[in-house]
Amino acid sequence: MPTIAHLKKGERAIIKDFSVDLVPLKLLEMGCLPGNEVALVQTAPFRDPLYLNINGSHLAIRKDTAAKIEVELIP
Image (tube, rainbow, N blue to C red; front, side, top):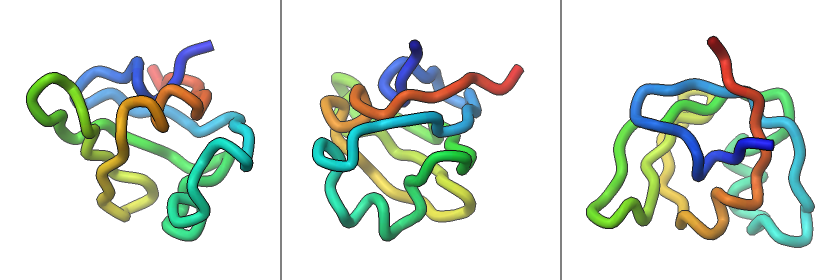
């Protein structure tokens, strides 16, 4: 199953599933919830962190955290 860490710049996806224990509470508060749309806006050098747009909110998350959030790609 692809994760946010697998997204390429400009790709969009729907957040599917993740373990609440592995994802910081702050991400949940900012809209990183199952069913929400996520798009990769930009990556920093060495692809860490990732700059995302989640339902209109812009945030940066570390690649190891992004690898724990499963998504379904939007064609």
